Image 1: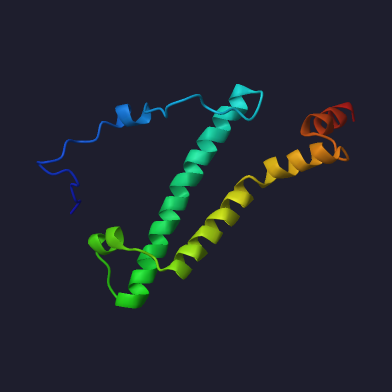
Image 2 (image 1 turned 30 degrees about the horizontal axis):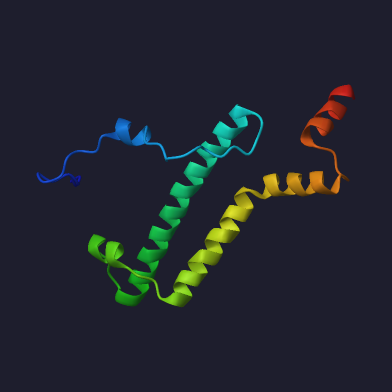
Length: 128
Protein backbone atom coordinates (compact mmCIF):
# COMPACT_ATOMS: atom_id res chain seq x y z
CA UNK A 1 0.00 0.00 0.00
CA UNK A 2 1.43 3.40 -0.91
CA UNK A 3 1.67 6.04 1.76
CA UNK A 4 0.14 9.44 1.07
CA UNK A 5 2.45 12.00 2.69
CA UNK A 6 -0.04 14.86 2.44
CA UNK A 7 -2.42 15.24 5.35
CA UNK A 8 -5.54 17.31 5.58
CA UNK A 9 -3.52 20.01 7.37
CA UNK A 10 -0.89 20.18 4.62
CA UNK A 11 -1.30 21.63 1.18
CA UNK A 12 -0.04 19.47 -1.70
CA UNK A 13 3.34 20.51 -3.03
CA UNK A 14 3.29 22.94 -5.92
CA UNK A 15 6.13 21.33 -7.87
CA UNK A 16 6.11 23.93 -10.63
CA UNK A 17 6.42 26.77 -8.12
CA UNK A 18 9.27 24.99 -6.33
CA UNK A 19 11.21 24.31 -9.51
CA UNK A 20 10.95 27.97 -10.44
CA UNK A 21 12.21 29.18 -7.06
CA UNK A 22 15.28 31.37 -7.40
CA UNK A 23 17.87 32.49 -4.88
CA UNK A 24 18.20 36.21 -4.27
CA UNK A 25 21.07 38.14 -5.79
CA UNK A 26 23.06 37.61 -8.95
CA UNK A 27 23.92 34.09 -9.95
CA UNK A 28 27.67 33.46 -10.07
CA UNK A 29 29.06 32.39 -13.43
CA UNK A 30 32.26 30.40 -13.73
CA UNK A 31 32.45 29.70 -17.47
CA UNK A 32 32.03 31.83 -20.57
CA UNK A 33 29.64 29.41 -22.28
CA UNK A 34 26.09 29.53 -20.87
CA UNK A 35 25.48 25.94 -21.97
CA UNK A 36 28.42 24.79 -19.85
CA UNK A 37 26.99 26.77 -16.94
CA UNK A 38 23.61 25.07 -17.34
CA UNK A 39 25.16 21.60 -17.45
CA UNK A 40 27.26 22.42 -14.40
CA UNK A 41 24.19 23.69 -12.52
CA UNK A 42 22.22 20.55 -13.37
CA UNK A 43 25.16 18.32 -12.43
CA UNK A 44 25.63 20.05 -9.10
CA UNK A 45 21.90 19.87 -8.33
CA UNK A 46 21.91 16.10 -9.00
CA UNK A 47 25.13 15.76 -6.97
CA UNK A 48 23.45 17.58 -4.08
CA UNK A 49 20.43 15.30 -4.21
CA UNK A 50 22.69 12.25 -4.27
CA UNK A 51 24.66 13.56 -1.28
CA UNK A 52 21.42 13.99 0.69
CA UNK A 53 20.38 10.46 -0.26
CA UNK A 54 23.79 9.15 0.83
CA UNK A 55 23.49 10.98 4.15
CA UNK A 56 20.02 9.52 4.71
CA UNK A 57 21.25 6.02 3.89
CA UNK A 58 24.14 6.52 6.32
CA UNK A 59 21.59 7.49 8.98
CA UNK A 60 19.54 4.37 8.30
CA UNK A 61 22.64 2.15 8.47
CA UNK A 62 23.72 3.76 11.76
CA UNK A 63 20.28 3.35 13.31
CA UNK A 64 20.03 -0.27 12.17
CA UNK A 65 23.42 -1.04 13.68
CA UNK A 66 22.67 0.65 16.99
CA UNK A 67 18.95 -0.08 17.40
CA UNK A 68 18.19 -2.98 15.05
CA UNK A 69 15.12 -1.21 13.68
CA UNK A 70 14.31 2.18 12.25
CA UNK A 71 11.29 4.41 11.77
CA UNK A 72 10.83 7.59 9.75
CA UNK A 73 10.73 9.54 13.00
CA UNK A 74 14.08 8.02 14.02
CA UNK A 75 15.60 9.07 10.70
CA UNK A 76 14.26 12.62 10.92
CA UNK A 77 15.41 13.02 14.54
CA UNK A 78 18.88 11.52 14.07
CA UNK A 79 21.80 13.71 15.15
CA UNK A 80 25.23 12.24 14.39
CA UNK A 81 27.83 12.43 17.12
CA UNK A 82 30.84 14.69 16.39
CA UNK A 83 33.02 11.85 15.05
CA UNK A 84 30.23 10.62 12.79
CA UNK A 85 29.54 14.17 11.58
CA UNK A 86 33.24 14.59 10.79
CA UNK A 87 33.26 11.35 8.74
CA UNK A 88 30.23 12.61 6.82
CA UNK A 89 31.90 15.96 6.21
CA UNK A 90 35.08 14.29 4.98
CA UNK A 91 33.05 12.02 2.66
CA UNK A 92 31.23 15.07 1.26
CA UNK A 93 34.47 16.96 0.60
CA UNK A 94 35.98 13.94 -1.17
CA UNK A 95 32.76 13.45 -3.13
CA UNK A 96 32.77 17.04 -4.39
CA UNK A 97 36.48 16.79 -5.22
CA UNK A 98 35.76 13.71 -7.37
CA UNK A 99 32.88 15.43 -9.16
CA UNK A 100 34.83 18.61 -9.83
CA UNK A 101 38.17 16.89 -10.48
CA UNK A 102 38.21 17.63 -14.21
CA UNK A 103 37.49 21.32 -13.62
CA UNK A 104 40.25 21.50 -11.00
CA UNK A 105 42.74 19.65 -13.20
CA UNK A 106 42.08 21.87 -16.20
CA UNK A 107 42.36 24.99 -14.06
CA UNK A 108 45.68 23.82 -12.64
CA UNK A 109 46.95 22.99 -16.14
CA UNK A 110 46.03 26.48 -17.35
CA UNK A 111 47.81 28.03 -14.37
CA UNK A 112 50.94 25.97 -15.10
CA UNK A 113 50.71 26.55 -18.83
CA UNK A 114 52.36 23.20 -19.52
CA UNK A 115 49.39 21.25 -20.80
CA UNK A 116 47.11 21.95 -23.73
CA UNK A 117 43.54 23.02 -23.06
CA UNK A 118 40.68 20.79 -24.17
CA UNK A 119 40.18 23.07 -27.17
CA UNK A 120 43.84 22.80 -28.15
CA UNK A 121 43.84 19.03 -27.80
CA UNK A 122 40.65 18.81 -29.89
CA UNK A 123 42.14 21.04 -32.59
CA UNK A 124 45.24 18.83 -32.73
CA UNK A 125 43.12 15.71 -33.07
CA UNK A 126 41.08 17.37 -35.82
CA UNK A 127 44.24 18.02 -37.82
CA UNK A 128 45.43 14.43 -37.63
